[in-house]
Image 1: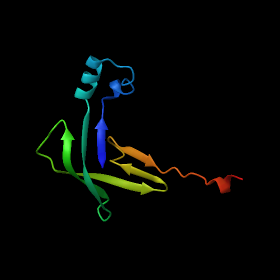
Image 2: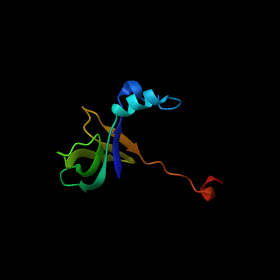
Image 3: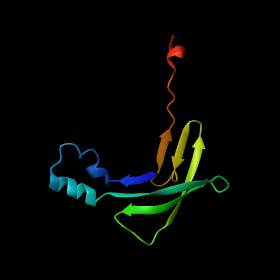
Image 4: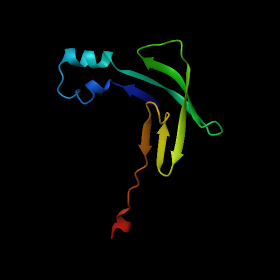
Length: 98
């Protein structure tokens, strides 16, 4: 799982057509980590076990993120702070369109 590639809001959308110096600056402001995760339904959180990250931070190995499921949506994080919402998109089969 790759999770958490984050760039500051002022640099989002500026990757296309950027020169090397601009790309270096954008990457220096980014953060990402990868590893495994496990949902803790009883406590309403997802525990991410960090296996690697950019920039390196060898001190943190687990991060617990609150989550909430509602309908076809998954929210990671709290309402009052930075959070992400993922919405399930269902495709219609060709036979159901006719």
